[in-house]
Image 1: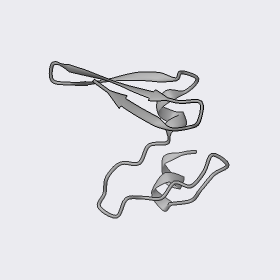
Image 2: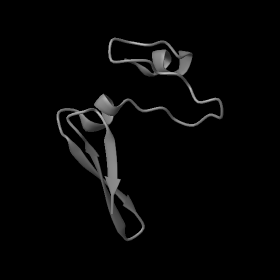
Image 3: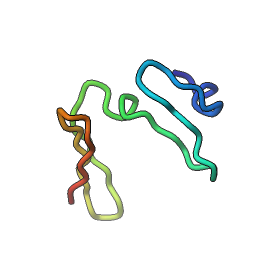
Amino acid sequence: MNADRRQSGESDAEGSCSPSGEGRPVFLAKELFGERKELEIHLGTTVYRLRLTKAGKLILTK
């Protein structure tokens, strides 16, 4: 899905993708994770792990 479709709020086969009403960026989990099940988010000196479970839930841990 390209940025034009994301901003227009159109959905795709992966599920819906609606723009936030306040100009916040919208990311599809598939775009962030790709084929991986875990990624790291660095905030200052703290590292968080974001995991995608088999049930399709997101878990954020420090």
